[in-house]
Image (cartoon, rainbow, N blue to C red):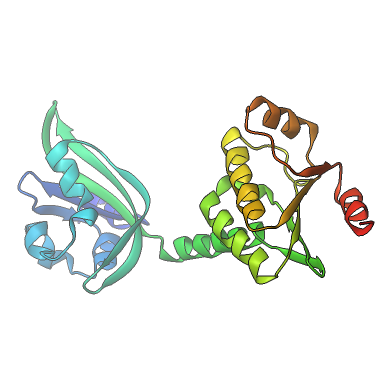
Length: 242
């Protein structure tokens, strides 16, 4: 084994090289292990013959060779046949003196990381729609800073359902933890408030910082028929005095 091959096999990620006929010319030990194959059985074989059932959406190195475009993906579902993983993928076109002679792909198993990230994302989403019952018919929705990092449609659907499940007729939306949002956020927040109003739920907003107030005004969104209070304590005092 040459020193170059020794280094190739010591890499912590899988590497596979194919030629212009889509035949595997090189694959390191980690690459063979990830694909659950033996190196001696696959070198010289076409990837289409070795993996005839592989869906097109995982054939990125073949697509790189076909289009001369390189691709990078943090997590690709590699789920067909005996495989049930998420792979990070990076492809490269191989050239010599300007002439393409093949393509290579670097890949690694990121299943654990991806699943942990998805669990964290789910936790963030749940925290973002954590509707808290305060008293009979009154609930609190404290908006979290994570809300500008996730799909708001989830917030809209889940938040509405949580309020309905609590049979609340009054909801305080507290913005005190938000410091930076964008116009799109306010557009969708307006839709949430309008949806609640159509359901007969009276909405109060508390804790909006001056910078957010200025942004809302500059957005030229239609005015909302809701009360605004400087903080949650003032809002609660006003509602409890009614």
